[in-house]
Length: 371
Ligand SMILES: *Cc1c(COP(=O)(O)O)cnc(C)c1O
Image 1 (cartoon, rainbow, N blue to C red):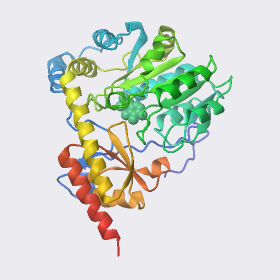
Image 2: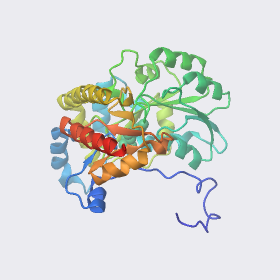
Image 3: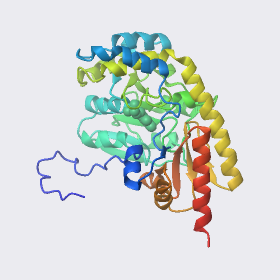
Image 4: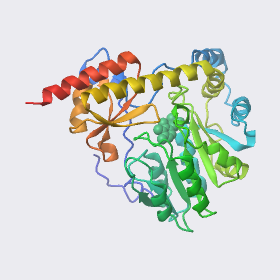
């Protein structure tokens, strides 16, 4: 930790922001432990990599990178508008869905504005509210689920923004269509709902609400999606928001003119067309999820059934200890203590080989822990 001697310079609340702890990069673990083979199952990336068509599109665009990117993402917006069947004026792109979260805060949150955030989930919601000086009301998860009833109780006429993550990172559970519709019926008209659907494509439950349906109904709702997960483009940084044009207008007012780089734009447009790659990815995740469930069950290990491409696993020991031991063996996972789940790890579902490797290392560490 550095000593803060210049806090008089920083805006209010900046010093108190909890630093984001990312999944450890493969190269760092190789350096630290002198390992050659390292697998990363920590950041919910696509185990099949990017779409090969997207990679070709990047190669073809490489000689154009002396031009500034198209700030409107015209071609990509057209492609996505067709794909989602929403008008172009309902879309805005950003440098990852994370940047959309920042834009929402910049555009809508005044100092002191109350915002409701689920506790111990994906950090950026809370971070951006704090940066803008908003005030946070937490809603606790209940049985690893976002409790919309409780969230409603934390909302009043002055609540500016409510953040919902569906499926929720890190537990992988969803709020159902019925629960979400009831929530929308009861939320004050002036409150903005942000619905983060980063894992939309992985969900197989029939009870899962598609946020865009409610944008079409004209709700005060911004839906977030990303090209980082199922599309395998996390390293390029591109995500988007779907909302009614006036809300999009406010987001654009605070966005940097060239926030999405050229390569991200062409890759995203190509990836969108590569339905084969998306299907292969989703099929793999569903198959491997079943495999992991079966194996974990037979080991007597508890986990939270997930609608996303990761599983929260109750490892029955200090997750920091397990995390360290797994790192030494070249397997990167995410320890749950950062979400106040000290006995859990969050495992990104990998290929069959990666999953087997994880299970082998996990079993050995569990076995050696016993007297
Ligand atoms: C990964 C993730 C995102 C998207 O991040 P990008 O900035 O688009 O890479 C957004 N929300 C949640 C909950 C996520 O897990």
